Length: 427
Ligand SMILES: *Cc1c(COP(=O)(O)O)cnc(C)c1O
Ligand SMILES: [Zn+2]
Picture 1 (cartoon, rainbow, N blue to C red):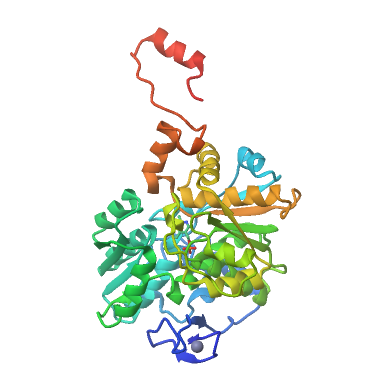
Picture 2 (cartoon, rainbow, N blue to C red):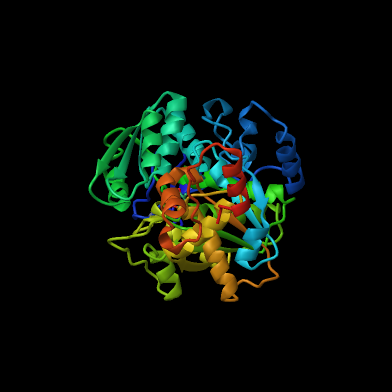
């Protein structure tokens, strides 16, 4: 395995800890295509579905041949991440305007977000390379995930969190796992820049989304989706985009599946950004070749509050170019409307995740996606990741939502309760 710069083709050995090429571009992990044909790999992956306690019970490491084949099993730090459900819900189909929408509930990961798919790979590799101190900049979910794996491995985690617009639930989760939380006046983007510039000299292993291992681990999301659907994929895969690491991983994972012959058709991908933080969408829509960062990104979907997505070039190459990808932006109101539908379906998600369904609906309305096509939406984070958003919508009807559902004080008497039931108190 080696690191390669897709821009200038320089290579670095996989045993050297580097994130960026000397030319300034992000590096990519390049590894040998696994031995054997697609059918043999399928049998291997199928067999591992019955594993309960080895590293192969993980929804990431089940696909180790396509993630990090050279890492010894003994170095793997896992919480059996992945293995999340995929659901179909009639109200969601109706809302999207399609016959069949699969919702991949990455919210069911051990720390409550898809970040676990990449973090297990980054922390495993970092520990294997001898690091005991880890750092990341985060909008909250990366920090909870890093804090969890660092605790599992007995290592220290330091996380840089902006002092505004981070969900308290995420910060508390990070603190509870025992990580050192360093808050600062500035944005996620400032934190990234700092940890990139100073992480190495401080002896820290950097687990930001630019870490190529995070991308490799996150490829397992689309492997799981394809595996669950018998190695076929719907016409579209829709996901929210912030730093664009997940979009990059999705595009790269699709390319792997296609090259190896595990799927014979690459689906189209739609990246959904929040209107208040949509530099990538504006670039693609405007047909520009360079991303113009936003200095003051602002969206209630805090996981998407990123003005300068580090992986935009990779997302452009792996998604927009290779998977005929599309982009769209949605307002906070549209996000909360979709979130209410997902919550009421019993699946639930945090605001950023609902951007996928809101974007899908918009693309169907605009006839970019045909009503006879099928889609999977990635639900990236758990509904309990942002309990303040639940209060805003359920208790206060914020964002013009009809999802109001307040507790009703009652006396525990038969006739009182009977009246409540008949009145259909719930809206
Ligand atoms: C991190 C995150 C995103 C954005 O993913 P990127 O890889 O940064 O584009 C979306 N939703 C949730 C819940 C997240 O935690
Ligand atoms: Zn280079």
